[in-house]
Image 1 (cartoon, helix red, strand yellow):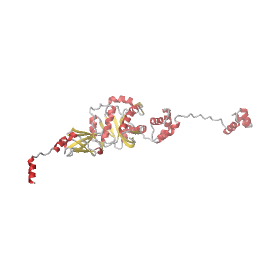
Image 2: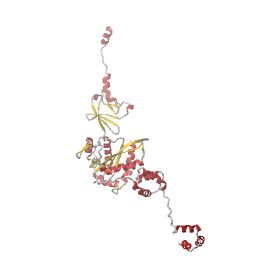
Image 3: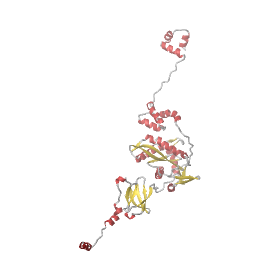
Image 4: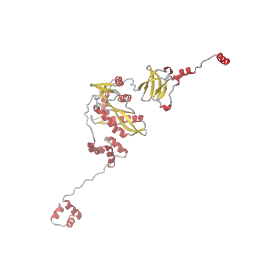
Length: 386
């Protein structure tokens, strides 16, 4: 104001500068600006600045879980706070494509929701497709998942059983999608379930439920967990020694992280909410359900059966008969005749050769090695005639 007032009275800029004790250029800039200078606040550097390109890259790849992103940048050297990262991500969430789902709450111990997902990850140094079954308790949101190389009926039942064992109990009902392992068809509002799935339900004491066709989002809670596992667990952990190792890492992650998370909908720690649900679960049965593959085989006259391109011995007295073969998911092979276990093997590849238990064919060998005994007179008669 003083510079402007003196200038309007005709005082030269040089004299104004001398009178006010400033540089002449300061006077010139003030007159050009025609207002008081605005002092810009000095921006403080953030520990996150160097890692923002990495954060942006993860967001573009569809990774929106702040905990996962935090661990990724911590591995790269970030030492800042979680809140700084969340404040940076928050304005960008509007760009994330999403779908709204109405969620229905159920009482404790009422329902378990089951679904399959798939992902490509590194197993033993090679990129492989892995299937994982996710089973979530609808009340507490506690979930369990198990990975395998197949999503057929036997692996579906095995995954459910492992989840029941992880939770320490069974819900009153299980809601599934329409995979053939559980549901064969919908007709006239009625559901025809797979007979073996009904057998599993009877063994564990739950009521099977199925989503309406084309309405898989009825299982909204569980479908969200499929995405959560993909964008959280399989982003944090990207390589495994084997599928067994993968499941070991998964179970540790479930206990150390997933069970301890604050659930966004119910605003409560999952583990704490599960404590209230646990008493409502039914107890596990005393005998575990057998999820083995069941097949019928014809025993050859040499006392062997064909399984998976290789041959396995069974007791010789069963030659020519039919037997029931049960193949466990752990490659355990059991052979039954009239529901009695008669042979037990571990599956082997064809190049490893036939699998033989000597005791199985002892009687066959004794019969084979028997030599007909003839009196010496027979040979003397032959010699005389010749």
